Length: 189
Image 1 (cartoon, rainbow, N blue to C red):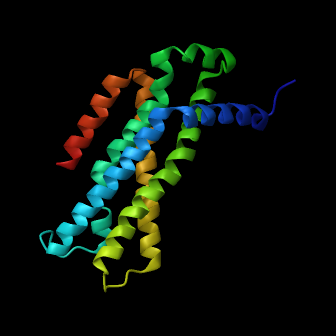
Image 2 (cartoon, rainbow, N blue to C red):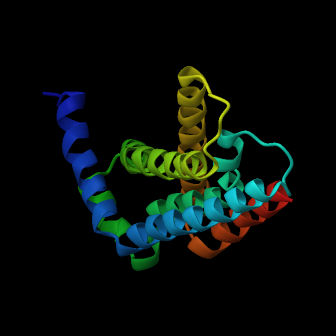
Image 3 (cartoon, helix red, strand yellow):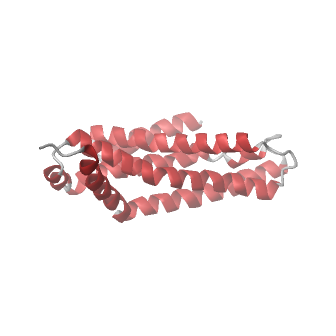
C-alpha cells in the first residue's frame, strides 16, 4: 500500500517547522534584521526629510533599506539549510526521511512559512515609519501600496529560498555566507 502525499508531507513539514522554530539563530537573525531595518528606516527617513535625498515618495523612503535587509534573509536561508550539516543532525533527518528531495522541499516550504510573515512585517514597518514621520501629503493608491508590499515581501522570501538552495548544494555555512553576502555588496553599490 502506498501512503498518500498529504500523510507524508504533514509530519515532515511539522518536523521541519519544529526544527526551524527551535533554532535560536533563526530568531536572532530575524530580530537583528528587524532592528537594523528600523534603524535604517529612521536614517533614510531623516535624510529624506532634510531634502538630501531629493524628492522621494514615502514608499521609496520606506523601502530604501531593502538592499541591506536582504542580508538578513540570506543568512536566514543559509542557517535553515546548513544548520543540520554543522552538527551532524542530517544523518538522523535522512534516516527518518530517506526521500532527500522530498525532505529538502518541505524544508524550503517551512522556510517560506516563516520568511513570508517576517518579510511582510519588516517591509511594512519601514514603510509605516516613513509614512508616519513624513506625513506625506501626496496620497498613494492603496493598490499600489499593496502591490509594492507584496512584491518586496516576495523578493525577500525568494532571496531566502535562493540562499537556502545554494546552502543545500554547498552544505557549509561559511562559504555560502561569503558568496551570498559578496553578491549583496556588489548589488548595493
